[in-house]
Every structure is written in structure tokens, then in C-alpha cells.
Length: 437
Image (tube, rainbow, N blue to C red; front, side, top):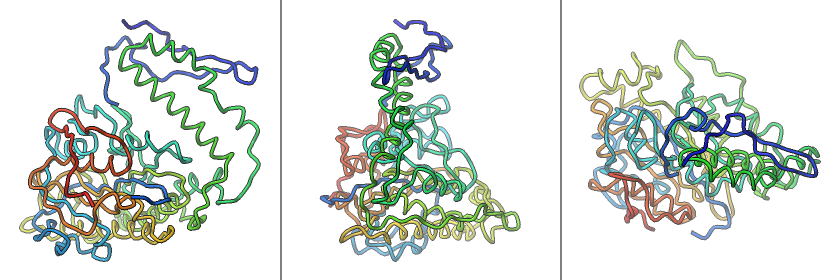
């Protein structure tokens, strides 16, 4: 049975002889609402995982390769990725099996969380945040979220109504990564003594937090755990300031990007922003500032005016007649920016390999054919092998298999002992066997 708890309740304890306290997150019991629980290869270099997402789908007839296996030929829309072919696995004909109740939203929600949208939001954390919970504590930032199109929307979720908004300003992203708090490998600095005083806050209030957990309902217990994990994440960042970063030879402080990227004749500089963000993210990973990222290139249902386009992207997917040459050109442009990003990762040398080889990057969109909002024949690319944990250099025709099998394969390749992924129609206990090396 739930206990009524005042919204100003603090967890209190002693740290270094001084009384300390931390606040609580907004809990359902504060407003007397009822809630339900939700679920929450041998390289010495760390594995990284990330998502590269773009909105409005593809043109399946020009996206899907016509042959399978290692000797497949890249399709027209995949040609910008030709120099990276050996590092890619293209997966066609998989299906997102969760309910397609919301055009452009149901597909990525089903793929990333394994469940359908309920009440306008997700029920479970997205795959990037599942991995952030497993490996995010090893780095300064638990995860990094970026975007190109200016928006706070994302498919990176820590839980219901807990979106992780992307940073869309290259300069702001640079300042966060390489401003105050950044140190080059081997660079010693004196840490503010107040930093040490803030450590072990949760240990000091641990007994009271444990008692409070037993008094909360299921949903509020999860909200409390997420809040405390956020505090613990801050402590981990503080701890990183007291240590030398790993001695990664490729790490360097990059040049600061411009303060702003003004629209040109009403058109955002998507490629310029994307490439600046790509260079910064590659170096953030090279310096081991984070091992998990979500790159929200463009939003679902976005009407971005791309170069040469007479109308917005989403409008063109529905209104451009015939074989939609302008939509085709936009997808190719996005693939060119994806190629730049993946090449930036590949250019970071790590031992006898490179950062891309030590990563798994899931590249996808919100539907198959934009005009029909189909989530059958779901477009998927996996770049990198996670240090040899996944196969690369092939096209896999999944023939209607559950797309969540790809998600489960990724979790396992990243070292997570996951017996299953998803719930209901999206649930799977098996990965996609063709991804095995």
C-alpha cells in the first residue's frame, strides 16, 4: 500500500560530519496519481554504441539491395556509403511488430524500446539508455545526445515522458565536451576541494532512501531510482575529474566550431552542422568522454528545406509525383552526411584498428516508404562490429523477422546479458542469427 509523502520531503544524512540532503523527483504519490511499473570481440579498447536517426523514411525500391550476402551491390540510395561497405551490414525486410498506431512514431518506438506507444509516450527506456545504464558509469558523460535539425524531440528515452533532448548547437556541444572539466590524457590538474566534499552523497542518505523505497508504489519507486541514478551520475562525473582520463593516443582537443550556423536563404545548413557535430562526437568518443550516443539528424515529420528542394521533406514524401526524384536526392544527401560521420569514427586510430571497428552504430529512420508510413521492410544499417562481435560487409534479407531481434543482437554484442528484448508483439528471446560473425 502506498504511503502519502510530502512533495518537499528530503533525504538526509551526514557527510564529513556535516548534515546534507538531496531532493526527490516528482513522484505520482505527490499528486495522488496511480502508476504502473515499467521495465525499466576481444579488443582492449572500449566498445561504443550509438544511433544515427533521420526522419521520413526512404524509397524502398531504391534503398534495398537486390542481392544478398557479402557480394551484394549497394543500392542507389546507399551509394554514398560505398567507401564504408566493408564496415556495414545492411538489413532489409525486417518488420517492427508492435502496433503501427502513430505514423512516423510507432516504428522507431518499437525498434528502440520493444513496445508500442501507450498514452502518447514510451513504456520503456530506449536501447541507448539501456546500454547507458550498463556502461555509462565508466565515462564522464553517461550518454551524449546531439541533433542537426533544431528541436528538443528525440527517440532517446530514459522512461515514460523522459526524453533526452539533443544538443543542436556545435559550439554549445564543444563547450560541454572540451570546455571546463575536460583534460587531455596525462594532464594533471588540481580539483576544487568542494568536488571531494560532494562525493558519496548517496551513501550518506542511503538508509533513508532504502526506507523510502519501501513506502512507495511501483511507478514511484522507479522514478526515485532514476532520480538517484542521475545524482550518482553526477558523482561519477566528479570522480572522473579526480582521475586521469585513459591514455588514448588519438584524443585531442579540437578547434571550436563557429558560434552559429545561420540559415541560407531560409534553408538550414544541415550538412555543415552535421559534419561539425560528427567531428566533435568522434573526438568525444576517442577521448572516452562517453561510450553511448544518440545522433538525431532530423525529426520525424520534419519539413526541412533541403538544398534544391521546392518544398519541405515530409511534404515531398507525400506530394511529389512519380518516382520522387527530389525525395531520392534528399535521402542520398542524408546518406552522404552519415558517411561523413562514420568516416570520422573510422579515421580515429585505436591500436591496430579504429574507433568505428570498436563501435556499433545503428542507423535507421521512422518508416519504410514515407508516403505509406509502413513499418514493414524496415530500413536498417549497422556500422561497425563492436570489436568483432557482429558481422559486417554483408546484406541480410530478414524476410519478415522481428526487427527487435536486431536490437537484442546489439545488446548482447555490447556485452549485456539480455535474455530478451521487448514486450508483447515486439518481444523476442533470439537475436538475428545472420548477424553472428
